[in-house]
Image (cartoon, rainbow, N blue to C red; front, side):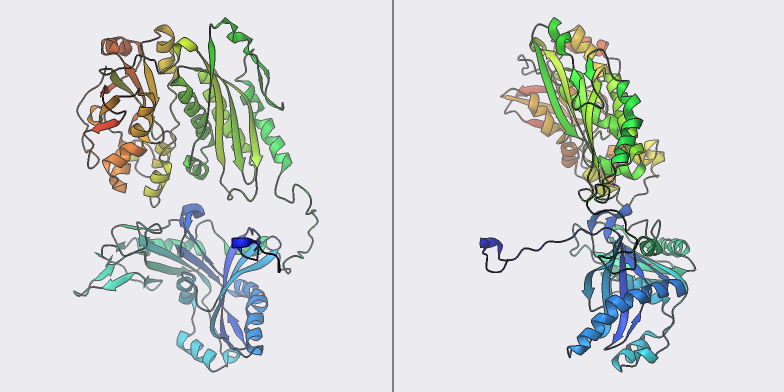
Length: 629
């Protein structure tokens, strides 16, 4: 681009290549001309299990030692370390010390991402415990230029390192309130490396913020080393801390070697697929066809006579002549997604429930306008299509559509390598329903003195999962059954409730009984109830008139989330709110077939939601009554 001005953007354009593969940390000792490579190591950079969450300075590392592992990295060292070391010497700037190359083992061969003139953290904590030679003597050999004569010895086996960080890391890695580190362990197969700790005037060890310390353990195999590291970590008592629970579990440095060609980048041997083919670009058309085959029966189970064209067509076709019997039919449409709940669904393979989520969420969104659903369309996107996953998600959608009398007439399944991270997917949907113009909600006669009746939610529904996942990031998702009556992940993944079976009979049998409905989704009460309020009315909601479900108590306690924030983010156990005249309360209660709650009333005001009785902390006992039934 030299000689061509790009204005404020500068005169250069940098194009980066997206690389996919296992990362490998390649370290070597250098004496100016010679390199002695260390065993292969791998960092765990992401904050959360399964490599989820933001990047960090490193939440753990693994290293493998032994003749085979060292033989594999020696070939890499000749290419990536020795050439750099000797090139610097030829330029008159010999490098003495530790040279670090960050590699990625792609299908086209290993490629260098970065170089550092230092040990890597936390790889060093996994590598040095495997060193049998004296580190001081190794450094002296480097300084004296006789590294090639020094007999470098390594233990055979593996080492796993787990980093213990402050609970706010990596969002807030600044200074934290000091607290004592109680270490009740010792042993000959583990070390504790201190980071953001200090010695107090009284001689105690205190943690002060960020990545606090790490535990390294070694054994004959990586699984054994990982178990030993976590056993040692369990002996450390450090409040307000977090760590990953999957260091060394399900990871294999050897797999990176196996999946990567040793040939130079750009010329992998035996590669026959055309770079210009769709498959070579990462899109599997056959997988898409298999997904359609698996989902066909489920989709067609939602069809009625009105569906003229559905799966396999360019567009779904729905016969609208059935609406001719209506006086003034009004079509109501909505589209939405399920947010970051998909991350938990992907982690636990709960694809059917997430399919129910998207349909029921959209059904509730048009129900609040008095509409019944006609048809639904979905959108599923992933980096690599898994036909079984798509079929399971569509089966969940089909089930929810059948229960709502709604046809699943179309959708899109998109495979987009490079857009989504491996293992991730996204799910969205659109729904179309119909309502008589005269029965649209909210009605025009909503006024001060009307009552607010709440109907129970089935859980978090599809909102607040970014906060919930952050709070439970260090939690064993199989736990909490004694509190929740089921494992934590099942409680979080409970499908979004559809209120159509509960409220549609009321809307049909006694139009006008319910004046308005508010679906409590993202934004909680403050973000949703105002949508149905005419100007000049406030909604007074008494939050102690219904019990706070155990899951919300757990979130509030563990995350130390203020009450106001809880009711701003979550539905807190009430997923739908109805507005009725006071004289109709008894009739509504008699028509709905479940317990409901009288949670508040409307009053003159400025169109605000006023939450009365917000708790400072999660209640330990059931709150006082207030049920409408």
